[in-house]
Length: 343
Image (cartoon, rainbow, N blue to C red; front, side):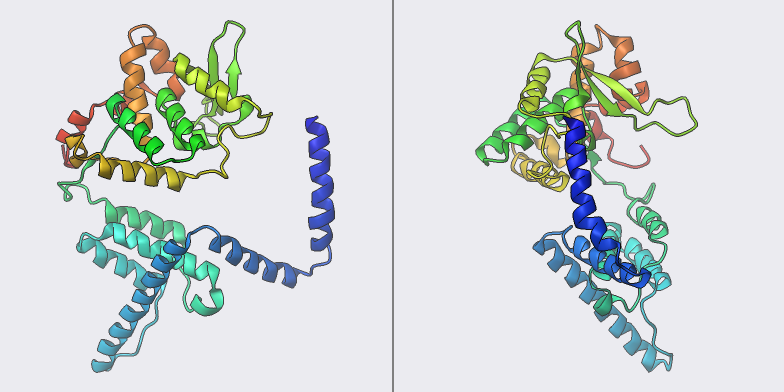
């Protein structure tokens, strides 16, 4: 059955895509690629994000105009935006404790330059990977930012509150089930959104395992490319079986067309704002997204399973080392007390 589907796909691609590409010259392919990149890049953000990026781009233009006015008064030649000038701009923002804002300008530049090169291609960021690394330095100043809230974890009480908030807000059912699976199985959101039918494995003895990519895997090492993570709780098993119902090999358990990682992150942010009164600790820890579900899930697993299967937990629980388990499982109270980069 899978072979038949693959054959149909190949025939469709050959007919509708390769037939078109076969007659293109090298110059035409390059031009089409630039147009395709522009169109696909434009599809990556919402209208609100586009307005934000466009506003930042215009601010950069205003900054350059003001800079050249001052240079003119000093009888200096005008300058244009360049990678070097942008790096200096990042450094200035870092000194103003606006490192995170600098990241926003970088994203705006990349987006504007790749969606409308004819209008916005006066200068192009070169070596984006290097600038991305410098932006990390701008937003993370070791020993100086003394009041940065630590990333928190969503514990049992918080998770119940989050579920109530999602149900009352009539959020997508697939998202709600995915959040439950992430929490009960301590999954990363990247693992959850890519979880497919065949990755849920049921053994003859009734045990349930998740087949996941190994984040620690590196070519040439003894680390396996994939790991199996045991599903310990009956509730998690039931949710996974429900998600599998009606699906086939190769299909996602949580269809990516119904929600995405950004939407999941926005949900966590929205709930945290509403729940600050109910959970005062939220004023001291930062719920930055679905990874807080993994932190809370590891704490839950440690509390409920560690006594029975301590060795299995440390050796096999999602390829987590003992050090990672201890870090994930710290309580919010402990996290809130550790608010400096030095401590």
